Length: 519
Ligand code: NAP
Image 1 (cartoon, rainbow, N blue to C red):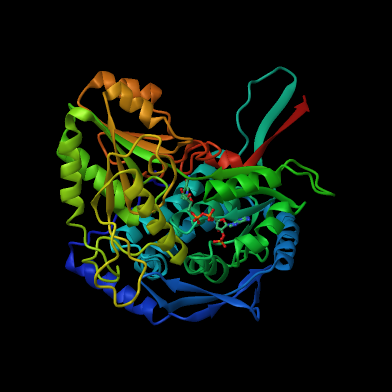
Image 2 (cartoon, rainbow, N blue to C red; image 1 turned 30 degrees about the horizontal axis):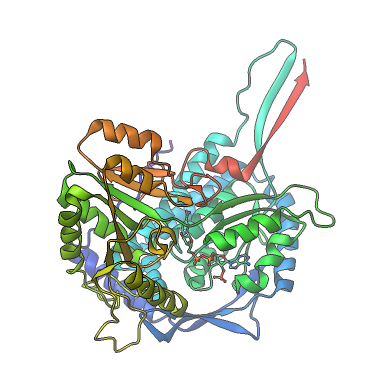
């Protein structure tokens, strides 16, 4: 019998055996650096003349992997091949499709540290951050497989004399899967496996800063699990050059995207345009940015609040959609909390994350690095620099390191308080009262995550109603949602209101068909 879903445990890095195992995985992965990987259409591996490199952000002179570069022509072909494969794949029993995911979870579990080590090299995750990403990847496979078993059969409808009726969730068709680089394992795997287990075929276009981990997972499906050709097509290459072709294709049935508001809106608009020969309205699942806040009132446990702010603001260099980029502090405790946050953040070590003594690594690429310094410049105009804001003194590899940077006295409407920065830059904002703080909380166009620290039950209840975010946390940090336990996704400009890792997520990848026979 199938055991109930349980979240994959995190690795205990205080255990010397685990440390050794992770070091061994880093060594193995290091020996793979610089290899060239293909794109895959219909099971055919294609090596193109033009390639692009995935670089180590801690040492951009190091090519971690080289990839075939897909063109709009490849994109068109991939959608067409996926469309052909759909006719067979949709008829594969849902139990069999679920089994692929259970087996995939098992394979990743066996190679867990290699999976994580790739993310250390490719996007600069620290050991625990990479390990959490891997655990979430396993969780998505295990969770969606179970959900498919629940949703796959005939669903109950009300009985009626003389009718034998049933409702079934059937797949949609070809899905274009476009993940970001910041959870390059979990989000990529989550959107891909949800598409496939529901009976759709897919074209996976990995983020150009993290194609390697997407290849690692795709290769397991191709080589170890022998997924039928054409069911998953792997298309590395610049989204700006071939993303439109994937989205616009008349045979594309849905687009599962996670990334910036800018690209999400572009996809939303383009998908709405009916193309010649197109027979359906394209569905879009668009999970976008955030400007997440932690609100602290005068009754809160201030040490716990400061700890949560630092963990949420600077974990993985602040590059989580759920990262705390606004600390909203009631004026009675503003100075004290700011002081605690700064003192705690001062202790953060920054450097290449192959070395586990570095809590923070680099930001992901040259573009992100340049953007951080622009925002730091804006911050110095808009507020008071309290910590960081200077390049590392010691940076022999020219890695994209930005220290934890904190600005105080930021106005609630300042750019630093409104725009998604997506890096280790925290804005501290003073609120007159808890009620005023609640206004600040909801004062951006986003609505992804948020947290409140208070000892007052009535305020928690007010927040429960009025703090308008998809994931709201009480007296805990605003990052680290668990699959199945805290289904994830935001409101407003943060996305199309879906909940990854939730019981209703797979429904977004299906349509309901009713069959009724006269008795
Ligand atoms: P991004 O720049 O929007 O890129 C996301 C993906 O879109 C990448 O694969 C990118 O490919 C592709 N893309 C670029 N241009 C495209 C086009 N014209 N058509 C189709 N696809 C295109 O975002 P990112 O920098 O990777 O990720 C960070 C963002 O993701 C942040 O805003 C963060 O808040 C958000 N995010 C949201 C959630 C959530 O659940 N709400 C979770 C994680 C991250 P290339 O890499 O080739 O450009």
